[in-house]
Image (cartoon, rainbow, N blue to C red; front, side, top):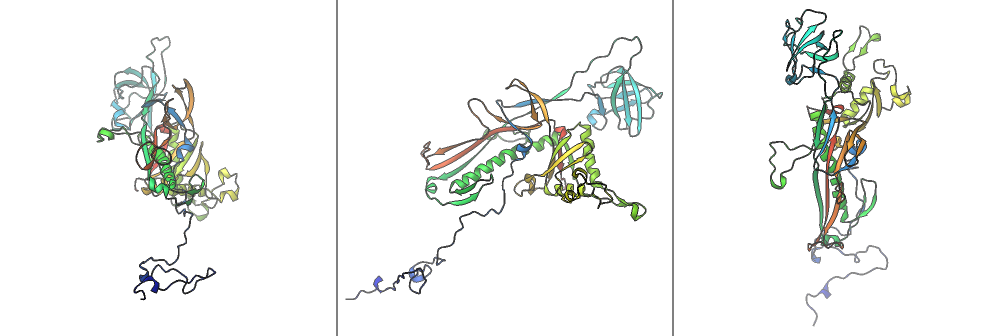
Length: 485
């Protein structure tokens, strides 16, 4: 008897001697009779190489350019910074207000704990009015003076913004009894390292299913990776976060609500240090141009208000005795505005006389991506800071426009080395001893790859670091902020 409803009755495939498509020699996966609905008739073409659509995705490198890394062995790092050597008081700050207590009795209110002494010669000033005086009486927060050129201080009132500084002393011939002495002033600062951790985990089954991907790493390496590609990116992400935490770190305040495992103390990052101790300039617009001036076209000049803004920063750096060489790390818009500001100084903009640092070479000046320039007695080296441009970091907010960092060093006593050494104003301290180096630790746990540390069917790559940032002489740094972002 013949077979009924058997596979023998189905259409069969006829193999061909060459790799040529015929109507009866291919497998169809989308046929309902075949029992499947596989969407593609043929195997797909697979690109092995990963497409780099975001370019270099890492944002670290800033601290490597401007600072250094060195070990510490304690829970806290403390340093001291020198104070001013001259005595001066500014009436702007309410807590240190300088006021005329009596403009006929020639008494002046000064901050409690002041350093003005008998026989000091001082200058007091408001706006365009000043007077030179001899200090003839000193109390806790009041001094009495004798003006040299006027009978009293009637030109001043207690509502004026009075400023004062000591410029010398004067004693009568044959006098004795020199008044007091002034100890050198200094300010102490400290910071605490934080512990950072991360991990990458993959189960044992996935490690046995190898699928190679050709990649080009952010560090310049290239080649093929399988499941370790994710571990590689986890490491890159952690290295970025090591730097970002030093930039964005914040000390825990009295209202911090972390308890238990979350009872941490925080750390002072770069931005927090500059907000508290540095110079902050808001809403810089360096390429701003004012109105043309002059009675005729041939003698009109343009008012470069952007350059005036930059000079305001230089004036403040002068007051701080800042370092001559500085590095500018900027976001894209601020970097371009400085390029525009510098380009406006060329002959095409209002009669600029020269190409400045380019030795008057026109072909170089026409390259408007200025990387270095000199203004006054300061040299500036400008570069883009990717951290401020990337849409997954500070570029997401746009509130920080850049940082001006002094290219200098400070001399400090290193207790571990037992001698004075020079260190950059900006440097990272990481925890290290003879027993453990916590600069950047990584170790593997689990039961995969011959690392049998547990019964878990997985491989875990652990990352850890303990570090903090030291921002010394923060008064020489400038933080450029955009308060309208």
